[in-house]
Length: 152
Image (cartoon, rainbow, N blue to C red):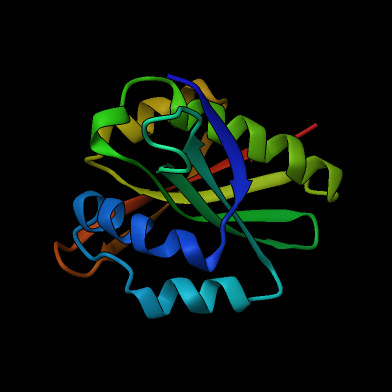
């Protein structure tokens, strides 16, 4: 499977919503993704398949914001059929490379305590836990772990 990175556009939102609904207990709406695109601080990318039978199919996405030297990851998800293939690791590393060129020196994100796959991924990428947000996820009351990564 070959894939490539592309800036998120309005034409990607319909495909993203399919992944979003499967991936999150409280999925973002189409309106929220459109608002994200209009934010001047938005730093949003998709991963698309590079093959003839499914050209331009979105298989992963990342929504984040860059403010000064900090990047905050708001959303990241991979299509279920493409998980455990290294796409999220690749997507994050590519976005970090681009972010460094924009002066970003640190990245922050929150993740559910129970999301073992995400915690393992972020640990593999040298994120460090720096805090906890009690009852962060309103639908379950679950805490969020705050992670931070320094970029060079």
